[in-house]
Length: 64
Length: 136
Image (tube, rainbow over all chains, first blue to last red; front, top):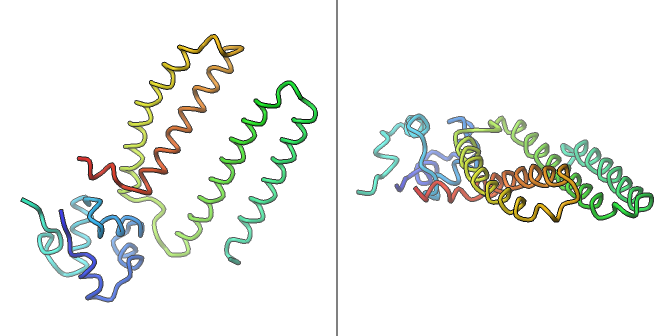
Protein backbone atom coordinates (compact mmCIF):
# COMPACT_ATOMS: atom_id res chain seq x y z
CA UNK A 1 0.00 0.00 0.00
CA UNK A 2 1.36 3.41 -1.02
CA UNK A 3 0.37 6.73 0.49
CA UNK A 4 0.64 10.47 -0.07
CA UNK A 5 1.33 11.48 3.51
CA UNK A 6 4.68 13.08 2.71
CA UNK A 7 3.24 15.20 -0.11
CA UNK A 8 0.19 16.24 1.89
CA UNK A 9 2.33 17.04 4.90
CA UNK A 10 4.55 19.24 2.74
CA UNK A 11 1.45 20.91 1.24
CA UNK A 12 0.19 21.82 4.72
CA UNK A 13 3.66 22.73 6.02
CA UNK A 14 3.61 20.17 8.81
CA UNK A 15 6.63 18.42 10.26
CA UNK A 16 6.52 14.71 11.05
CA UNK A 17 6.48 15.55 14.75
CA UNK A 18 3.57 17.97 14.35
CA UNK A 19 1.52 15.44 12.38
CA UNK A 20 2.37 12.77 14.94
CA UNK A 21 1.18 15.00 17.76
CA UNK A 22 -2.06 15.84 15.94
CA UNK A 23 -3.01 12.21 15.23
CA UNK A 24 -1.66 10.97 18.56
CA UNK A 25 1.18 8.67 17.53
CA UNK A 26 4.96 8.66 17.81
CA UNK A 27 7.08 10.36 15.15
CA UNK A 28 8.66 7.00 14.27
CA UNK A 29 5.22 5.72 13.27
CA UNK A 30 4.85 8.59 10.78
CA UNK A 31 8.35 7.82 9.44
CA UNK A 32 7.43 4.16 8.87
CA UNK A 33 4.08 5.19 7.34
CA UNK A 34 5.75 7.52 4.85
CA UNK A 35 8.23 4.82 3.88
CA UNK A 36 5.32 2.45 3.29
CA UNK A 37 6.68 0.06 5.90
CA UNK A 38 3.67 0.20 8.16
CA UNK A 39 -0.03 -0.18 7.41
CA UNK A 40 -2.03 1.93 9.85
CA UNK A 41 -5.17 0.90 11.67
CA UNK A 42 -8.46 2.18 10.29
CA UNK A 43 -8.68 4.69 13.14
CA UNK A 44 -5.23 6.12 12.40
CA UNK A 45 -5.88 6.21 8.64
CA UNK A 46 -9.12 8.09 9.33
CA UNK A 47 -7.38 10.58 11.64
CA UNK A 48 -4.67 11.27 9.08
CA UNK A 49 -7.16 11.67 6.21
CA UNK A 50 -9.29 13.97 8.38
CA UNK A 51 -6.26 16.11 9.22
CA UNK A 52 -5.50 16.58 5.52
CA UNK A 53 -9.22 17.10 4.74
CA UNK A 54 -9.16 14.16 2.32
CA UNK A 55 -10.79 10.77 2.12
CA UNK A 56 -8.84 7.67 3.15
CA UNK A 57 -8.67 6.58 -0.51
CA UNK A 58 -7.06 9.90 -1.45
CA UNK A 59 -4.31 9.47 1.12
CA UNK A 60 -3.75 5.71 0.96
CA UNK A 61 -3.47 4.02 -2.42
CA UNK A 62 -4.27 0.34 -2.41
CA UNK A 63 -2.38 -1.93 -4.80
CA UNK A 64 -4.73 -4.26 -6.65
CA UNK B 1 22.00 18.82 26.97
CA UNK B 2 20.85 20.70 30.06
CA UNK B 3 17.54 18.80 29.98
CA UNK B 4 19.28 15.45 30.31
CA UNK B 5 21.72 16.54 32.99
CA UNK B 6 19.97 14.65 35.80
CA UNK B 7 19.72 11.38 33.88
CA UNK B 8 23.38 11.58 32.85
CA UNK B 9 24.45 12.24 36.45
CA UNK B 10 22.30 9.40 37.82
CA UNK B 11 23.47 7.01 35.08
CA UNK B 12 27.10 7.98 35.66
CA UNK B 13 26.86 7.52 39.41
CA UNK B 14 25.14 4.15 39.13
CA UNK B 15 27.68 2.97 36.53
CA UNK B 16 30.53 3.91 38.86
CA UNK B 17 28.72 2.11 41.70
CA UNK B 18 28.30 -1.08 39.67
CA UNK B 19 31.82 -0.90 38.28
CA UNK B 20 33.05 -0.62 41.87
CA UNK B 21 30.94 -3.63 42.83
CA UNK B 22 32.48 -5.64 39.97
CA UNK B 23 36.03 -4.80 41.07
CA UNK B 24 35.19 -5.62 44.66
CA UNK B 25 33.78 -9.03 43.75
CA UNK B 26 36.70 -9.78 41.45
CA UNK B 27 39.16 -9.03 44.26
CA UNK B 28 37.26 -10.76 47.06
CA UNK B 29 35.67 -13.73 45.27
CA UNK B 30 38.30 -15.02 42.85
CA UNK B 31 36.50 -18.37 42.38
CA UNK B 32 33.30 -16.76 41.18
CA UNK B 33 34.92 -14.07 39.04
CA UNK B 34 33.47 -15.09 35.69
CA UNK B 35 29.90 -15.54 36.95
CA UNK B 36 29.94 -12.27 38.83
CA UNK B 37 31.51 -10.44 35.90
CA UNK B 38 28.78 -11.74 33.57
CA UNK B 39 26.03 -10.83 36.04
CA UNK B 40 27.53 -7.38 36.58
CA UNK B 41 27.85 -6.82 32.85
CA UNK B 42 24.17 -7.71 32.44
CA UNK B 43 23.28 -5.21 35.18
CA UNK B 44 25.38 -2.45 33.58
CA UNK B 45 23.83 -3.10 30.14
CA UNK B 46 20.36 -3.05 31.70
CA UNK B 47 21.19 0.18 33.46
CA UNK B 48 22.40 1.84 30.27
CA UNK B 49 19.23 0.70 28.48
CA UNK B 50 17.17 2.15 31.33
CA UNK B 51 18.93 5.52 31.16
CA UNK B 52 18.56 5.70 27.36
CA UNK B 53 14.87 4.90 27.70
CA UNK B 54 14.49 7.53 30.39
CA UNK B 55 16.10 10.15 28.17
CA UNK B 56 13.86 9.22 25.21
CA UNK B 57 10.77 9.32 27.40
CA UNK B 58 11.67 12.73 28.70
CA UNK B 59 12.15 13.95 25.14
CA UNK B 60 8.72 12.57 24.19
CA UNK B 61 7.11 14.34 27.13
CA UNK B 62 8.80 17.60 26.14
CA UNK B 63 7.48 17.19 22.58
CA UNK B 64 4.03 16.41 23.96
CA UNK B 65 4.19 13.09 22.08
CA UNK B 66 2.78 9.78 23.31
CA UNK B 67 5.37 7.33 24.60
CA UNK B 68 3.46 4.39 23.12
CA UNK B 69 1.08 4.00 20.19
CA UNK B 70 -0.44 1.32 17.97
CA UNK B 71 2.90 0.65 16.26
CA UNK B 72 4.75 0.01 19.53
CA UNK B 73 1.87 -2.21 20.70
CA UNK B 74 2.16 -4.31 17.55
CA UNK B 75 5.95 -4.48 17.91
CA UNK B 76 5.53 -5.67 21.52
CA UNK B 77 3.02 -8.33 20.52
CA UNK B 78 5.20 -9.57 17.69
CA UNK B 79 8.36 -9.56 19.82
CA UNK B 80 6.50 -11.48 22.57
CA UNK B 81 5.30 -14.22 20.24
CA UNK B 82 8.67 -14.57 18.51
CA UNK B 83 10.61 -14.53 21.78
CA UNK B 84 8.43 -17.33 23.13
CA UNK B 85 9.21 -19.34 20.01
CA UNK B 86 12.99 -18.76 20.32
CA UNK B 87 12.92 -19.33 24.08
CA UNK B 88 11.61 -22.83 23.47
CA UNK B 89 14.76 -23.51 21.45
CA UNK B 90 16.89 -21.95 24.19
CA UNK B 91 15.35 -24.19 26.85
CA UNK B 92 15.80 -27.20 24.59
CA UNK B 93 19.52 -26.40 24.22
CA UNK B 94 19.81 -25.82 27.99
CA UNK B 95 18.28 -29.22 28.73
CA UNK B 96 20.63 -30.90 26.26
CA UNK B 97 23.62 -29.39 28.07
CA UNK B 98 22.15 -29.70 31.56
CA UNK B 99 25.20 -31.63 32.77
CA UNK B 100 27.38 -28.58 32.14
CA UNK B 101 25.63 -26.62 34.91
CA UNK B 102 26.76 -26.95 38.50
CA UNK B 103 23.24 -26.75 39.91
CA UNK B 104 19.60 -26.30 38.93
CA UNK B 105 19.50 -22.65 40.05
CA UNK B 106 22.23 -21.74 37.60
CA UNK B 107 20.41 -23.54 34.79
CA UNK B 108 17.10 -21.85 35.58
CA UNK B 109 18.78 -18.47 35.97
CA UNK B 110 20.46 -18.69 32.59
CA UNK B 111 17.20 -19.83 30.99
CA UNK B 112 15.14 -17.00 32.45
CA UNK B 113 17.78 -14.35 31.74
CA UNK B 114 18.22 -15.73 28.23
CA UNK B 115 14.48 -15.56 27.54
CA UNK B 116 14.37 -11.96 28.81
CA UNK B 117 17.38 -11.04 26.69
CA UNK B 118 15.77 -12.59 23.59
CA UNK B 119 12.61 -10.55 24.19
CA UNK B 120 14.59 -7.33 24.73
CA UNK B 121 16.69 -7.76 21.60
CA UNK B 122 13.67 -8.66 19.44
CA UNK B 123 11.63 -5.74 20.77
CA UNK B 124 14.47 -3.33 20.04
CA UNK B 125 14.90 -4.82 16.55
CA UNK B 126 11.22 -4.73 15.60
CA UNK B 127 10.71 -1.22 16.97
CA UNK B 128 13.63 0.07 14.94
CA UNK B 129 12.89 -1.67 11.64
CA UNK B 130 9.14 -2.39 11.33
CA UNK B 131 10.12 -5.18 8.87
CA UNK B 132 7.87 -7.60 10.70
CA UNK B 133 4.78 -5.76 9.47
CA UNK B 134 5.65 -5.95 5.78
CA UNK B 135 6.05 -9.75 6.01
CA UNK B 136 2.29 -10.20 6.09
